[in-house]
Length: 130
Ligand SMILES: [Zn+2]
Image (tube, rainbow, N blue to C red; front, side, top):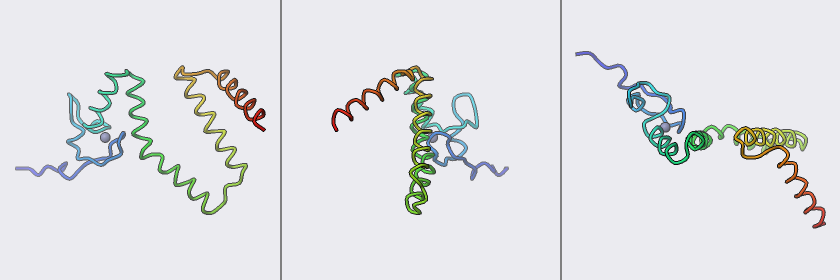
């Protein structure tokens, strides 16, 4: 009889971020997958509903629940120490917006021109409201 060393071994799922025993990553016809059985099932369900986009959305949403903590922590830290100048905030926000627009554009959800139009519209409203 041999002792199975993998008994105590496990890893973190690349989608939900939870730690599972290695056996949770052996399913289908493959072993040692990057995400757990549960996530695989959920992702497949998303895929059957909305195809590749929905499956990707599911992975991104799940990852965001645990990987974004680092980002929140940064913001929290900046607030506490009050080291974030207005300039830093503006720069960081414009990066976020640029990234968002570029992603939405890549996904074919909108064009840069539409975003600019929307900004103009909002400006007109805020000027009219003054
Ligand atoms: Zn998982």
